Amino acid sequence: MLLELCTWPEVEAYLDHSTGIILPHGSTEQHGPSGPFGTDWICAAAIARGIGERTGALVGPTIGLGANQFNLAFPGTISLRATTLMALVTDYVDSLAGQGFTRFYVLNGHGGNVAPLRAAWHDLHTDRRHPGIRTRLRSWWELPTVNQLRQELYGAHEGMHATPSEIAITQHLHPRETIDMAPAETLSAAYLRDHAGDQHDDAEAHRRRFPDGRIGSDPGLATPEQGKRLLEAAIADGVADYTAFLAET
Ligand code: NI
Image (cartoon, rainbow, N blue to C red; front, side, top):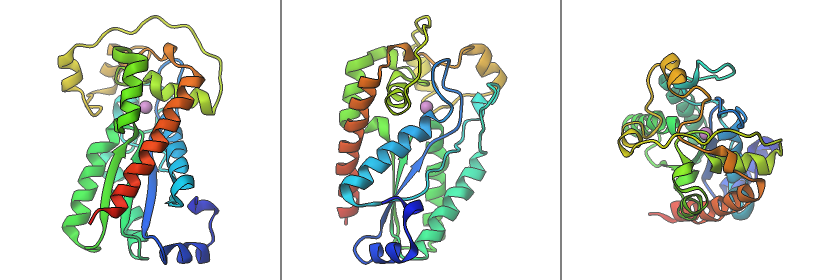
């Protein structure tokens, strides 16, 4: 069930049998020479919708903006400050928690959202306005079958940003012409460690370092067929993960 297509009596009836909701979250940022700006939220929304269809879970409006200041030197990128993101997600949860929702499952599509989301959860639980609520943050690429599949398909070519796995999902959902591009540089283990979770600094320096927007990825390997497999794996894993989250005592 998509909240935007429900009426209020339908949501009130839903709360009689479930107090869980899935919150898809992504970003609007450049995704290299072949990936659309909406990649992160398009992937998150599709996976969340699939989980909702199979479990009957209510899926809230997708948050299409994230924390991604490091991509601001690429035209079209829009970034929230971390504090804006925290305020946004807090208001989202506060609104629904006041009506009886108690389980908030964020299906995340952008690494830079993780730190602000965790900080928001920290403050929500500190404030204890809604002491019964539980929160779970899940980035789709860490779901076990998806993670295995993307390693099998792309290995080290997966990289950190504009990854072939996320681009493949967008190709499946929104077919577009592929373009040729040179193989990406291989990033060192130290680089991957030091920049995990999208820890990148100044936007102009970032563009100079990664001029076409990719970070160690080869999205030219992506195909729509792989995207279909990855999406289906993410939905299947997500169904199990969301169900376990609701059952947790
Ligand atoms: Ni992305």
